[in-house]
Length: 434
Image (cartoon, rainbow, N blue to C red; front, side, top):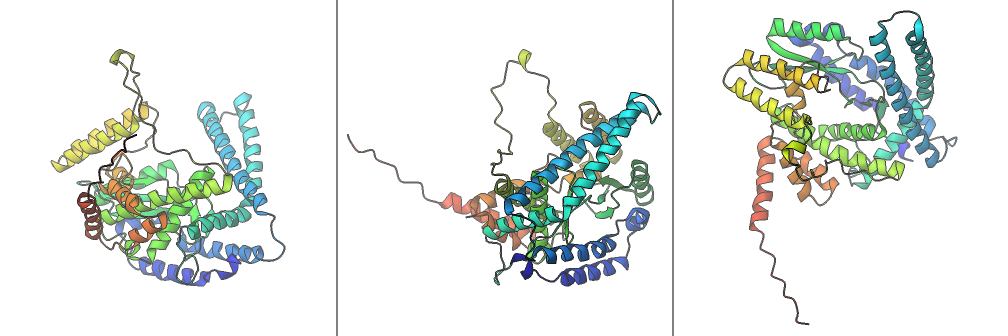
């Protein structure tokens, strides 16, 4: 059975211990500044691995947890609960903002009811979690295997191992004079807004670096952390995305992820493209429903100016912002760029996009995903070119795994374009006389 062929968890734990121990000996100033809020990764691994593997052992015993259909229904129910929890949490937050925690009245009564409903929903979801994690792993693993990603010995390495939980946040740091993700630190998930702001200001004041605390959907730990406060589709895409990082960890692409900003962008962009495609396949296998094309539909013919609605285009506005920031920084106008970003942030907020802080670190984080409007990297289109030229998704993932530096990748893309230019024109077709 699939569970009985897993690689021992001790291997991954030993690897983690080695890496964490090495990092602990050379804390950077940013890590020291964030020490009170740092995510206890080693503690999380030690507390989760035994429970995960004990449950896996039970899952291979004859007393199974129902048919595949029943397990898939539980999986979908779990994420419906998550969506309901998110909705009630938003309502609860709105009540607290309106009522200001004033006791009494309809607002307080509704807040109390919401607290009880949320507690019950969370208990129900928690009871399902262990079995749902196993089902998610099985379904993702099946799609990965079907894509031809098993090792030469017939195993999927690393095995898919997912923990549905609240992921940590990330402190991202960038130089002020340029946009570059120079450092990242995992922080506790429950760090408050005031603490975020204080930490960002501390890094700015002490290190003269732009800093930003951001939310993430998952972390390539082992087990992989995937947020459960989301939709089923997003969770499946995230699980596949993070598994790809683990898969590439043992290959040139992963070995060199931090060797340059371009290699980081290459890793993240490839994982996003392939992870979304894999996640979509799993979603279809789980639900029986195809995924709608995630690309936006072609815009309708432009209406006359007087009839065209005044609609805020986030992607276009963010791209314009990034380009102007790059121009200002390129001219050495750091304060000018920062003032411009602050003014633009207010524009986004006024149009319903609640960006807490827009600075160099914001663009350094979001810009590492080349498909993002916050990125100006050509890597997104180049990765898509490699995918188009690949015979299959598995072929694309294996091809990407072999790039140890950005020049190798660029040379490969150039060879694809050269081959396309050298291809002979198709012969003219003659239509036989009737």
